[in-house]
Structure formats: structure tokens, C-alpha cells
Image 1 (cartoon, rainbow, N blue to C red):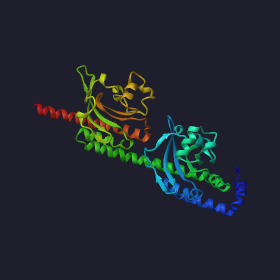
Image 2: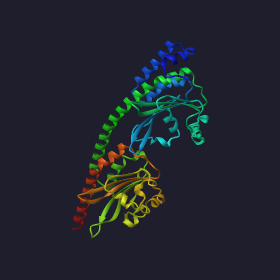
Image 3: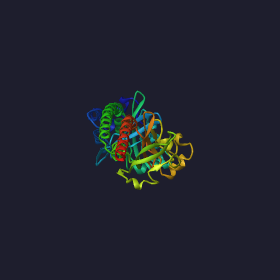
Image 4: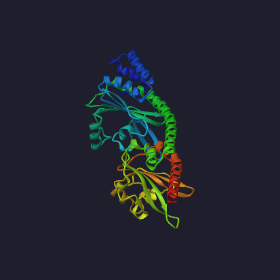
Length: 379
């Protein structure tokens, strides 16, 4: 067992590698890691060492704190065959507590955690270790990345079969923790700045597409492009119609996409015009602010009435609604639905919220133009 005293640790590994060679090896590895400019390069450099000791997989995971808890995002994966950088923005995000590795990650805390055999680790139940065996392997090293007590993320190194960690490996991985944490902090700071810039570019591009849209399908396509990579099951653009008492009486579907493809309006299930009585999500669609529901079956906003039962029947679990309201009058709503629960990152929420006023103005102008044309043809 290694101590927290680096000098004592060097003595322990002396039988395997002399002190000068060990320090030189750590120096080269630290230098290689510090010169990397992407998550893929970062894991490639680490894989040079881990691969020599038979590692089968390395996963780099970043953490981010949100109001509902700690989220994790796998950003790069290494195998002896090569390194894959996962698309950074909006993808592969999940709650930390939902992964089978969570108990090991949190157990690592400030020190590297070496698991010789996941089947015999007291932290894991049978369901957890069997899943880890299938998806990772029998032996693991967990390298926590923290700065000033705050989680930056974690590196998970795994071996397909049981691996006994020598004193040299233990010392090297422990010695790398400060470097890994510093690199993760710097990369995340850079990525945050890059995300802000990309956010502005996406908003500008979407606003431009909305400005050039000449029909309802093009309006919906401009907004739907933002969530395509999330695999929404459907998205709709709906117009509101008022009755004689100046109350919204009908929601009319004027454009719909099933998956990524436009749907002919005559094929819309249940028809294109719906009243409050025939629209289970009426109140959700006509909310005061953009609405993001990641799980209809657990969100407290869906408890009222038969909303959850209707959602189950429609295989609707995650839901986004962008209410379109101009001059205190409803114009309509754009809605997106998923058949499974889904985490909506802060970037997506912000972008959709920011473009909603432009979307509202475009829809209002489109409706005025359509009405003007109708009046002209009628005359």
C-alpha cells in the first residue's frame, strides 16, 4: 500500500525501477499530457502509459453542476485501437447517480482508487459489478479530477481481465492527479468560452434562417435544426384561433416533423385542429415561458389531471414547448416530444429561450401576411 509521502513511495518502487528513471518517466508523461490541445490527445497521451500495462479502455468524463444535481458528460474514449472524441456539445450527458460507476467515482474523492476485481469490491452490488464487467472490465483505476474541492471530472481506466497493480503503476497514477485536474480545469474553461461563442453563432444562424423562411415548414425547420441531434420523435408548429369571447378555442397544426422528416398535414394523427378538450397538453403548450420537461412521468408540473396518463398513451416522456405570444395575444406554439426521458443542457435551454421572441415575431408576421393575402383574394 502506498503512503501519501512521495519520497517513501519512490523507495517502495525502487525494486522495480530506480528513482531517477521513475521521476523521468513521470516527467515525460506529465509533459506530454500538458501539451495536449484536445480531449482525444489527452487520452492518447495517457493511453501510451496505460496501454503498456494492458489497459483495454479509458474514458474521460467531465462533471457539471446544475440546479437538479451533478451531471456527467463522457467527452473522449481510448482503446488500443485508437481514440474517439465524443461530440462535445449537448451529447452523452447523464446524471452522475444514474451510472453504475458512481459509487466508485465518489469513493475515489481525493485519491486514485484501484479496484483489482470489481466482483469482490464491497462498494458494488451484483447488478453494478455485472454491468461494469460487461461495459468496462474486471479491474479499474479511478482518477478523480478536483480543483479547490470542486469536481472537474474523472478518468476511468479499465482492464478486460483481472489486473494486479504494481507499486510503480500506483505511484505514477497518484502522481498524475494534480496534472490531470489542472488540465481538466483549463480545458473546461476553454470549452465554456468556446460554447459561448458557438451559442452566439447558432442563435445568429437560426435567426437568419427564420428571417428567410417563407412558409410554415421552413419556420419549423429553422427551429427543429437545433434539436435534430437529440433525436426528437416529433415537432410541431401550431397556430392559435380565438373565439367570439376572445379566448383561445383551437390549436391548429400548420407544420409537423416526424423524426427529421416533414409530415403531410392530412396525415397528422387526430387531424390538424384541436380544442382544449381534445388536446391533452394544451396548458403545457400555452405556458407563459418556454417549458422544458425532461420526464413527464416524474415532473411535478404534469401531476394535474390526466396529463401523465395521456403522455403514457402517446408514448411522450420528454417535452419542450416554446409559447408564441405577441402584444398579449397568443400566436401559437412550437413543441417537441421524445418517447424517453431526456436531459436538456443549459446551452439548449438558453438558445431556444433566446430565439423565441424572434420566432414569435416571424410567426406573427407570417400570419398577418396570410390574412392579408386571403382578404385580397376574397375581394
